Length: 121
Image 1 (cartoon, rainbow, N blue to C red):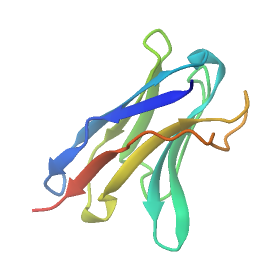
Image 2: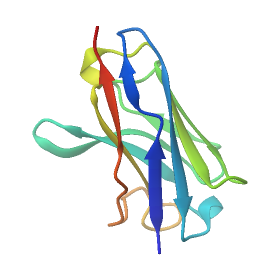
Image 3: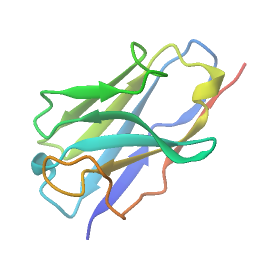
């Protein structure tokens, strides 16, 4: 069964940093792209960052570009989101998922519990 377990969230002051982790299981991790999402006003969710299966290519939402870095360790079946220069508007529950198909970006129907990030002074 496909599973995602997100961790690493917490309370941080504006300008601070956090590193989120996503432990994945139930599939061949190195075959699929990985994606981080967060809820967004007026939308089901916002794609925050994504990374190809081999880590060779990444994409970031304009709202986080230059501040967040997505990475993965295929040996550990884990994806990461390094979040620097955090802003109050980054406050959200962050979820990870994989592409539904190899080479694709649309998420599967499997969702973890997410990890709460709160940016506040």
